[in-house]
Image (cartoon, rainbow, N blue to C red; front, side):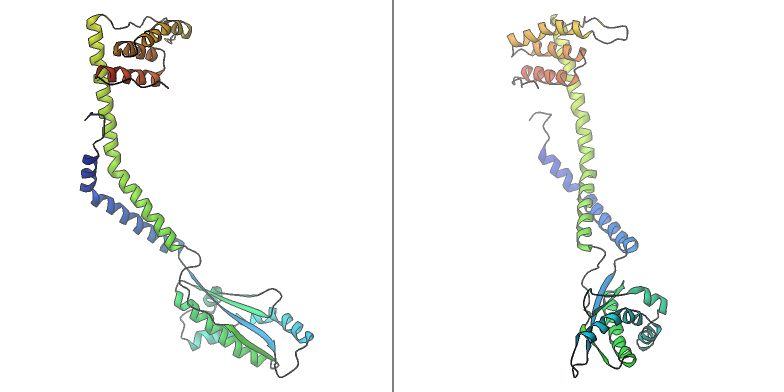
Length: 297
């Protein structure tokens, strides 16, 4: 096997030995992400109960009565968050919250062009959010019936316990944290390998260049850098182009000569074309080792 080829089997063995580090990074990222979600983002649950205002069914419902109900909705939304309602919710259910704290969790709104009032409760506890929403709706119904004797207030929908936070997609975030942990864990294991391998390849590449240069120097076939330079030390491009043509022609005449490729690489390097110089030098080594040259890009 060529020394420049990565031994996949050895890589898998190395990775298996470092699985603890991999899983530790996954656990760390998931734990840190979960802590961030809970402590910083603070998942909250929202429950909603709805109330409908309707005239007494024993009477004939007329448009004027419906209009009157709609006009009362703004008043009703204020009653929902009044001391008269919320103080009863707190006392009857033994809540430890103050009126102000409970009021801040409640949002009351009316659905446009309807006689429906929505009571939403936000809480860090899913069960508590739906309990409070239903308590508020039930007590509001009792209190409002005492204030407006001719109006019937009915619960349209009771709140149900929410299954997931309304402000955080927990499942999606946990998946992101897990993937991030896997990427970081794999990176911590593979980066040292890739770094060491890159260093080894460069050392081997330099050693091979040195070996070929010594062979060419011993046979008197090593091209000398006689390119004219500017006072700043840069190669004269026009002169380099003329000199380069002869070495390119040598490769065209003997495409399987590693010596021709080596000298061409030296000219590329002298002219500052490092990428082409490396490609040509790799062709030189491949031919010297019994392989074939690859096309230049």
